[in-house]
Length: 506
Ligand SMILES: Cc1cc2nc3c(=O)[nH]c(=O)nc-3n(C[C@H](O)[C@H](O)[C@H](O)COP(=O)(O)OP(=O)(O)OC[C@H]3O[C@@H](n4cnc5c(N)ncnc54)[C@H](O)[C@@H]3O)c2cc1C
Image (cartoon, rainbow, N blue to C red; front, side):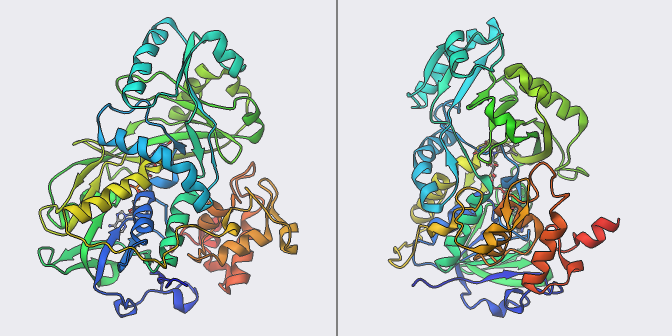
């Protein structure tokens, strides 16, 4: 049996089980840690998972009350092949490597994954003329299993594509994934292998950064000690780098808005429809999701860090999304939209995949600008970071023979592969997505012990269907309350300050 790490929440007045509450750094017996990872998005959690295969003392810290609650929760959820990446870039290299790793990795991690393929769709003569260039770029990127299609061939594969279609490129290995399970699965295995995970803890300062053992100051004025600090804080990475006086770089949030369509729409197209990119943007795509819906988006809106509604949506931009996606699949306008969301990319002016080893201080690794492809690249980027830790930061790595790299069979999400051996699985709680009472309980008791409505939503699909939680949210809050012995008025959407009782009364 491997040694499980600690999961602790900085949530003193929450009525959570006391053993889950972080109140003092003396609870962390592993200090000084060999490695502290700041940021539990897909990049930080993938790194924690891969590092947990070695004999190391690691802590993973995030200011949110669940893993994967930053940029990683608001993507298009494509596992890309890199056919259209900048030739010769690190991003291209990592996408290519990761896209080959993902099918096997998804099986190991029990993450829903489907190789549905994509078609780059040209809808006028000008766009058609660009197909050859896109084809050549793909070959240069090492993605050779693509096929040039004429208009008739596109229509044969996808009868509901625009009647204006002039041709396309089939990219058979472009895939879709459950983007939420990624960070969760990586974290659960890292925890199982001994990584401590601290949630709801914001890093607010550093001390002794030039010393072999560094101090991380957190909200609540706690102090954590670590030999190596890895900044994978996404949109928060620039602020952290300024605090430890690393090399200067600038980031800004680049928002992408999406529309989610009801499940019937998925019968209309079976592959990802990609537009011809322009010099400024990759454009609006329309894609099936692994959950059985269609989504259209994203926009690309550059915003300041202090924008009042970073993850908000706007009617004007969503109308643009519908117009853009309808050019590829005109029938979209007849489909029923059931939800909207946005994600916020971390755009770095100095370039994507901006990585600095020993960033002005030995033992600090800064990773910024993981903008548009981080879900795909996370496992390969983790390997890249581990190589840098070994080769440039002299970290000695001894494989841990007790470490596990595979989740149990029952970790498949219920909506994907449900067993009916438990009577609770016959009690539906969320009718839109057919989520059962048993599924909710199973996730409440899962390794990270999530207790918020959003955390349960991302694990079970409850609250994401046609009613968007109107019908089931209060019942689910009741189940959390009863099962975890937390008063109903203390059940939150996503952590302290988002208690639903007060939200509903506002
Ligand atoms: C609209 C859109 C579409 C996309 N589509 C795709 C796609 O189809 N395929 C794909 O591969 N990628 C896609 N991406 C990109 C992908 O989502 C990102 O590259 C990836 O999620 C970045 O992960 P991350 O771990 O770097 O950042 P994040 O997920 O943001 O994680 C960083 C974490 O750091 C934490 N943090 C920040 N500051 C602090 C602090 N001071 N203390 C403690 N914690 C802190 C945050 O809370 C956050 O959880 C898309 C992104 C967007 C926005």
